[in-house]
Length: 340
Ligand code: TXA
Ligand code: MG
Image (cartoon, rainbow, N blue to C red; front, side, top):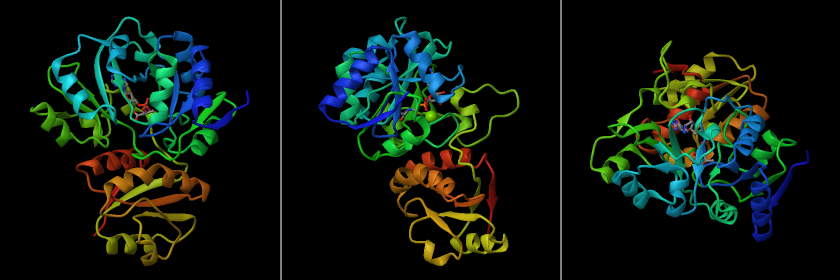
């Protein structure tokens, strides 16, 4: 199959909608990361997403809607607090887990009786969903296990020959995947941190939001994941990533001790001058938003440079930085070294 990349203008959006309604998979931009979209109401279309990504069948997909009128196609028994979150954060980078609607293709939910839904804010994503008139199931548009794509070129490098069309809507403004909150249980539960923070969710809901332990800790042997995606190795470049927690001086000293064969520093912007080894940067130390925007392209850059080991500066673990820390922990397979 030939994969075409097209700027997301009116013609391309109509073509994308035609392909989607014909049961095909299309790469689309969103404000978080690029998605691999298919008609969420069609079992055979959704199966093609799993095939293109090489995604395990037990990992459910997020359904994307363009208006609240589409909500009943994805979920049912929507509680008042879901509407509160929708009002505050949609369209935007928040995914809500609720009871599943019967109409939804069962492959989207991977056998669970819950479904996840999000209304993206990227104008091209919204236009494609509107033109198709159906909710679109869309995981991140990377091959399963590799860093999420934040540009159309990233999608092409993973999906070339696997899907017919990629819409190019520019670089993603958020850069990490949406915050995922479950409202399916008694208490709201944060399953994946993102640009919308736990603090913001608590403020809007006026109640406590519990954090899934899988956000900052590896799953214990035999433990089941509240969010199946948490159990897979994720966001991993080919390089071995090791997080170094401590000051810049201690970081520099540690790297210098390691010798220099194919190592790379994954540091904050502006620190390159201080280090005497190859560097890839991922945003300024004091800007978690910038770190989020640049992290995945930095992980891809490590591979482009052929780095064997990458020593990463450790972000904060609160607010937006919690999302960055969560992704880096997985890229590093939870290898964290305290340096001081
Ligand atoms: O920002 C995003 O959310 C992007 C863009 C494309 O919208 N999509 C995305 O999808 O990150 P994906 O499939 O890469 O991540 C979805 C995560 C997975 O960890 C999955 O296990 C979890 O959400 N998830 C989806 N439905 C769920 C459900 N019903 N219960 C628990 N976890 C669920
Ligand atoms: Mg993903």
